[in-house]
Image (tube, rainbow, N blue to C red; front, side, top):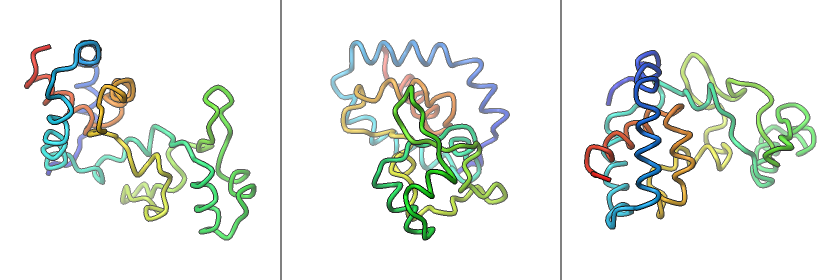
Length: 167
């Protein structure tokens, strides 16, 4: 597993983002028959190559959405009411209709270690990220198109997929 070099990653994104998004659009419009069997295999390869703790770009540049269950669970951990927790840490995004972090990087990210201080009770959105091998990948294609810019694992997954598929 290699440490992620964010500067190099951002340069790769600059060179390949448009081509990767076009590729994902083609896969979405005409998915290969084996795509849903292929993605879990590729995901295993990706996680052998990408070290999230050397990166944490998602926590530095994105915000998770918090479900009511997340808010209840995390606020209880801090000995707060859900309202107190929301007032202290979250904002409501009217456009998206979601509770999100007020600040970036995430207030629960330790910037020295890239570790989450609430990892065991983190939001559901965080625990599923980056959604690489969702059962029906075409249902999450819009998410992958967004995440290639933020997540080296998603980028690597799309890169591997593009090499294997001629779509």
